[in-house]
Image (cartoon, rainbow, N blue to C red; front, side, top):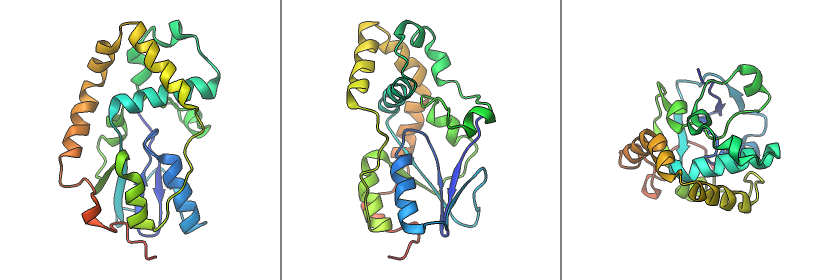
Length: 197
């Protein structure tokens, strides 16, 4: 089972989904709340619960590029030998606590059985930050863009795009349902996290 992390803040809880603006949000919360927030396995159920979602194929490519870069591992024959294994989510708490997670785990694995009040599309994250926190940040993970290009090229050259699309199909379906739901944040919703600037 996937162990989840919540960033618990005074008025809201942010469900961490890897490769969905996590570094960005955590940096903003650190600036706003200082020590008045923490990571936890459970959220404060009285507060608003929100998270960020991202187009699944873009997220997968970004996650795989990050893992390749972070681990200095580019044996593409080994990496692409079993696409299913890249998205499977059982993670030992030993690895999770060390920050050694697979950044390609499906978003649906993070979301299953979680009640989320508000979803934010990754494309709207900067706008969301301005409306809800009054600040933005330039904090993103450090993975150079050429790793994403290299991963995309490997997927195409190996002829596994359709296989990858098939594996991500459920995540794509869930993402589309979220994007078309009334729980998706838009600028007209303004400040929903309750932070008073």
